[in-house]
Amino acid sequence: MGITENADLVGRLLDVMEHDILPLTDRGVAQGNKVFGAALLRKSDLSLVMAETNRETENPLWHGEVHLLKCFYENPVSRQESTRDMIFLSTHEPCTMCMSAIAWAGFDNFFYFFSHQDSRDSFSIPHDLKMLKEVFGLEPGGYNHDNAFWRGRGLFDIMAGLPDDQASALLDQANRIRARYAALSEAYQASKDDNAIPLN
Image (tube, rainbow, N blue to C red; front, side, top):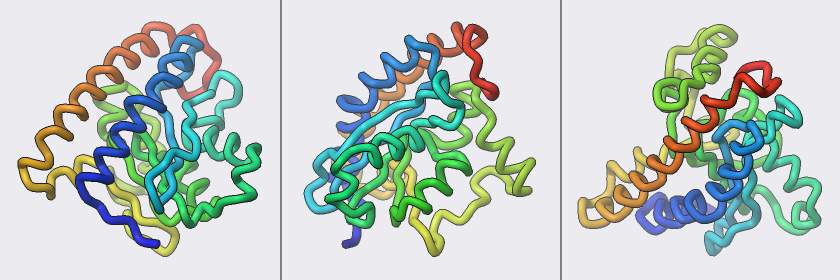
């Protein structure tokens, strides 16, 4: 089943970020975790399957996306529904580990709000771009967004292709979400020296 990249999709993904992921991330940051989160939605009706957030204070591998997959596979829903029938939403463009995990889990897509450059510049977390450069020799954006495993798309890229009357309300919501993440980022940066996350 394909995914139509339109205003309805973007609006639903923004709603999930704002109302399902952000409250979890708010609590996670208060416990010393980073601001990254993720969610799964059904392609058929865009209903929420599950949302989660970063738990790196428990395990440095529990990025938002990987922690979501861990929780998904611990839940009975994973035996009832196929990942091929789901949308993978990431608040931030997935790192190399998370991209690989998405592929290994059988998803054929992911959508993200903040880019790798945003993670570096707005959140002072440069590790995604550094990993791409140091390990794989790739410049920013240098990986294949369309490949044999999945199609990766930024929500702002989709919004840029929408008519102004459709994009306007979405951009208002996106700016509201950006402001909430900016506040969470400040809280994380102020407390990150108190945690034991290797790449904080």
